[in-house]
Amino acid sequence: MMTLEKSIEHSIRRMIRDELGGMSIKLHGSPYQEAGLPDLVVILRGRVFWLEVKRPGRKLTRVQSLVHERLRANGAQCYVVYSVEEARAVLAEATGGVCCGCSKGPADHSAITRESI
Image (cartoon, rainbow, N blue to C red):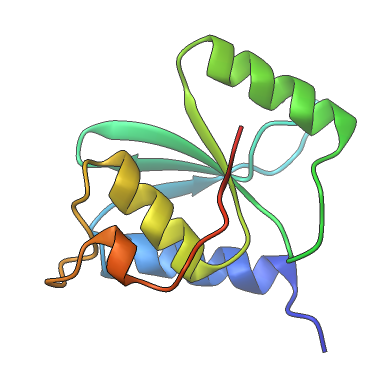
């Protein structure tokens, strides 16, 4: 059975809070919000990141791709992640190699296939 995106997202949020000491904000689509925004806004070590959480094998919609391109063009760090391990490694790399508090660097965690948007 395929892991639900919601379950992956919940695990990522817990990891950000419990392991990294960061904060994440879940964006829920509404008529008052721009369509295509990433699922999570992450505040970690004084920096802000956007994470789109996808199940393995899933792709961004056209609207998501366009919005993510606009975010990136405006200097935002926006990533698509498919697992907790990948989110941990992406955030470690983006914060200068500071990992989850372990003695390993991001390269020592499981291999990632990151798609930077």
